[in-house]
Length: 107
Length: 116
Image (cartoon, rainbow over all chains, first blue to last red; front, side):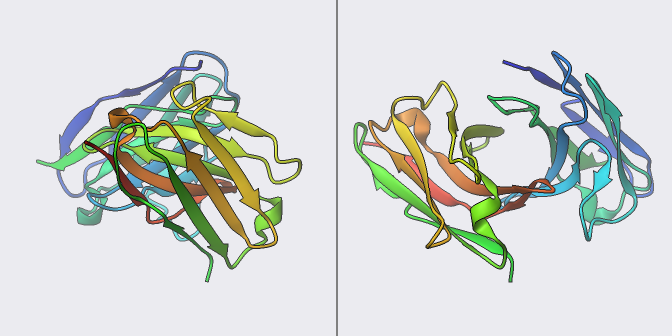
């Protein structure tokens, strides 16, 4: 199985900060990585697919990069509504696996 | 409206069975790869099962293999998850997820509680 390791597991940041979350796959997954945002008691929302493609309606302050084993989600200027938990998921092969999540909290 | 609506969750005793449904609307369901993902209370996301749109090949997590069965009815635009021999550790919110632009559309989830 492909292991997905996210870091950090949590972070504190202020509105306006640039935030970077990384996800590392235990083997090559090409570009087949998605990033999700989840707020409490809500379903996850897909932000990025195929490593760097923004889903429709997602603000342009979100961006994704990487390929192979190393991937990054960047929020260029953190907004109040961005405080949430973020997950990566590989969909290159089965079983599809998720990172453990990164909780972004208000500093 | 493009949406997925899950139903069928509830309280069941260990060893019991439950069938979840996911009604799809607003898109061409038959061509879409579909998935079930779950989230135990206070925990992260866990992929459970997938079914292809083209040939209905199925895939399962080791934790549910042999106990859960994924199925689809393309005429009714509905995805199912038959869950047998349920365990306490199957307690979770179960989400139906569409693959189109990646795993891009999630339902609101349905809660399954396995408890005596």
